[in-house]
Image (tube, rainbow, N blue to C red; front, top):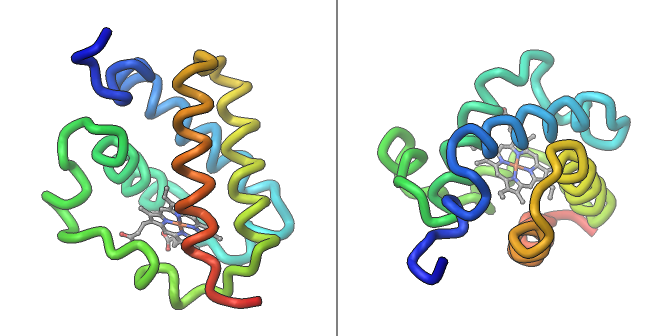
Length: 124
Ligand code: HEM
């Protein structure tokens, strides 16, 4: 497995797509997160699938369509406190449990996503 990307270890497009759909289903039910997001999460989920694909070493789908991610800047219009970061990560952990992500890749992803989520905090 030494030449497989995390994207491939996760299970590629199919598993990532199911993970992101499950994640946004959780977001839509979370009282601390749902007010920040549009009612229709279709386009949000589509962009997140593109982003996580390249984040995990798959094809650069997000950048091809939207340019450099600049994630912190793109999140500035939203008030994100440590509470939102923890809720975001909790929704992702729950989705990982629902999709049955294998333990090694689960821990790897949560480690990197935890750092990224805390980087998005822009309000005390
Ligand atoms: C977009 C919230 C963390 C990746 C968004 C949007 C919101 C949001 C409200 C706009 C949705 C829309 O209008 O479609 C949050 C909150 C976070 C968080 C509250 C808590 C820390 C993250 C993390 C990542 C991420 C950790 C990456 C792993 C993205 C991407 C987009 C996005 C790729 C789409 C950007 C675009 O418009 O092109 N987020 N986010 N977010 N978020 Fe987050």
